Image 1 (cartoon, helix red, strand yellow):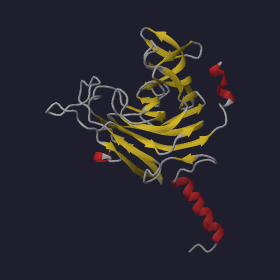
Image 2: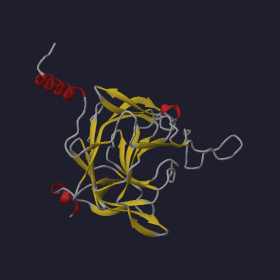
Image 3: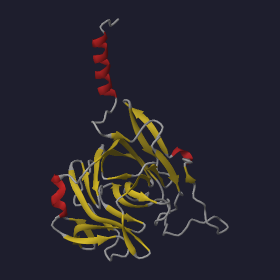
Image 4: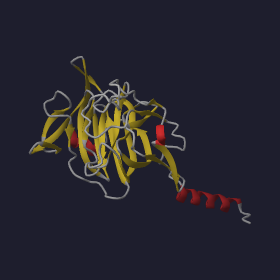
Length: 289
């Protein structure tokens, strides 16, 4: 039996280092065994060929969304790996978890890895999820009748860091146009994306930085109306003038909840942490000149 108390404490500390994820100072972990910092929303199982219309019952009436904090079929769950809570999203039902707290001016880090399952209506498409930030209002206000007004940090195969606007959100991106598609390019032309801008509501990341078949580290740095997206250490997108439209008027979209999407694919998230920042880090200032 170990009789030296100091030696015992040292052994415990070493063991914890190897069996659990410990954030650095001033970082806050967002995942725990009970998802205590999150709420849940689920909408529908969508059929193939969905074109934006409300799903219908056999009698022609609208199907009601599943709603808030139900977690039908345990689409969202926490599994423990080496003492670390890992969010498992089955993906069978469209939905999200979203933070109970609103956030503004922060650095968010997380890791993501794909599972094996895919579901309708994306059986023949790349696996898909997403981190939606500056999320405000009710769920179910965009094309898929599932998510809040927000800015989307796309999480998809071959496109981590892509930009999607959700509902009436808009953002400006330096971009180049290749054929019909836009790509982030820090030497490109600053242009607006989102509904009504004339450029569509989607812009590709500047590079595919995904590590196939393994964990990928994603970072979102957002301060004021500007944000930087980093995938495995590479800046893949810079956005400015984050806003949304209300009655024809542009309003700032610079704070809100964080949503993690369930979108027809099995996906895992871990090591999710956030910290407050007091300015855009100097090393990224050049992306906004």
